[in-house]
Length: 495
Image (cartoon, rainbow, N blue to C red; front, side, top):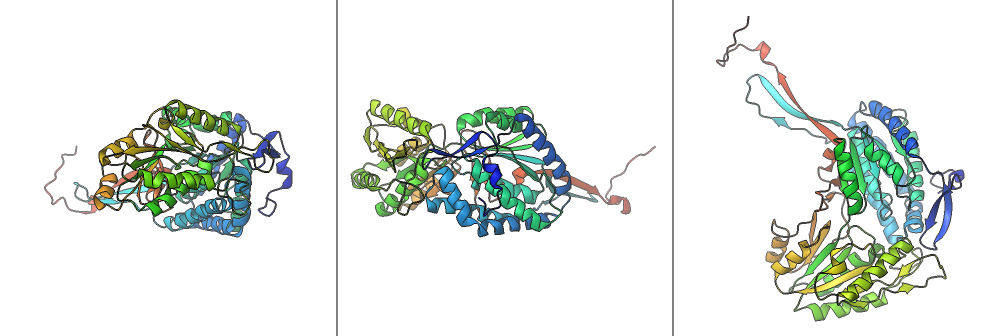
């Protein structure tokens, strides 16, 4: 953190603990902000927005370019910090920083492509067009499982759009946020005076701090990442004040394995999607729907892979599965497994793993649960490495099972049938915002808009035309007919 520009005094400035799931120990004690301080941060961001919106968009893109350069220079440090604080294995921590770099690159190009349409008008001597203007202050509430990438998806687009940002990171991952803010300040110093104070504000704390952003009418756009339960609370409160929500919520995601699937490809894709980040991704594969003709060829191989996977400290070489974030996550996992047994499921794995003698850290062997049907805990999202496996006989049945849960962010099908692939990605196929073929549901590229949790309609971040959510559209009609003769047969009686 020192190499990234963080003042060491920050790490002992208060009583809010920052814990590492690798050991279960408290590694820093930070200052916690109040709701009143969050409100004051919004006020500073409002003033910053008034200046930033006047800076030309390509110039705004230069600030994001400089931020990307800082991230490149400190990729190893920030990736390591993500592993320490969020429990991700080394490659995943570095991968998250790479996502930040990628969205910065995307946003730099976007700063010259904030296009509006010229629209045909029915009125002679007129021109009609749409223009896009900055929305204002963008509130960003992030979760522990992607402590910095999701912020960057929002902030990079907001900055080039002309918005200011107030960031409330998860109280389970405050250190990474402090480091990113320090890197941003380095980029801003290189950028110069065009970037005002208050352009990026960060507030640390619990629910009350988040609620201050949710309820503040000066925050026209509120992006929040978390559970569907959180989304049900945030969405209506933002809508009540006529704000706009971008909700990236939970995902009880499924993959279908058809009779024609390449089982070697499927095995790799399923294992990575289901066990990565210890099952703590919003795009984690949680349900596997396997055709009855290939079930006995695939599932025993999966069970064997699960039993042999290396569980351990995320920063150690060879580790493939790190810890759960805390005791609550482990307890929720065990409760789900007990519920699955009660519904007739057969559980393979799932036990606690003793790693390094860290009594306050919670490592668990990933679990495969063979279920007789899609029932009980299968219908709920548990943020842990549990994969429920079920059989199917027809594609229609499999798609109905895939769509038969409330929460769903991503989905996939493994098949070598063009007809099945096209059906799955069509209007009668997957009802999720992401539908993949021959690749697992986890992971997303910056070029495509990420999100679209089906239960809420959600919101879109990152690529495609997601930038429009951070701006407001105006339609402009210009009358230039005053210099033209009234030769079109339009006459007016003017007193």
